[in-house]
Image (tube, rainbow, N blue to C red):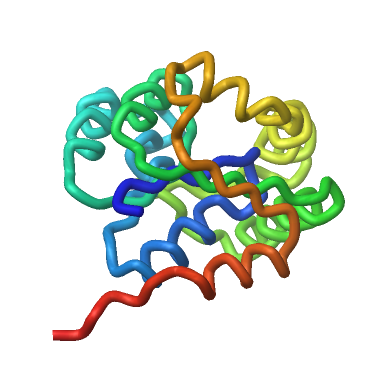
Length: 175
């Protein structure tokens, strides 16, 4: 478990889980959204260069997002963690998170903040999450098609499964 990809739709908790895996294993978490989003939500021109550098490292955890980045990350991954939560749970998470971030005007990446709630529901992150909710229903087949069918895959379908799996991870030895 040295190079871990966390997979699911927007708002399901990929970044939170990636951070927890990172902390538990004592390895770096690179938030891929932070690499992608430049000021005013524009894609950073250096994004793919950064992604190419990232998987070359010995150990990391990140989210499996962005079509152009997925093959680069998958090529070096040693484990895929599929956060396959029930619809009601991830939808409530993305709505709650978006509303909180908008209300608090929380800065995300490079000065960006969530769009208005109207825009978030009609053309922003909440709509995107809803439209892409079935994106990974066939994840094992997607990995097979990408030539990584033998890559270990952990599928977590509930909060309880997430917590139980995290508890099985080794804790790095303290020096």
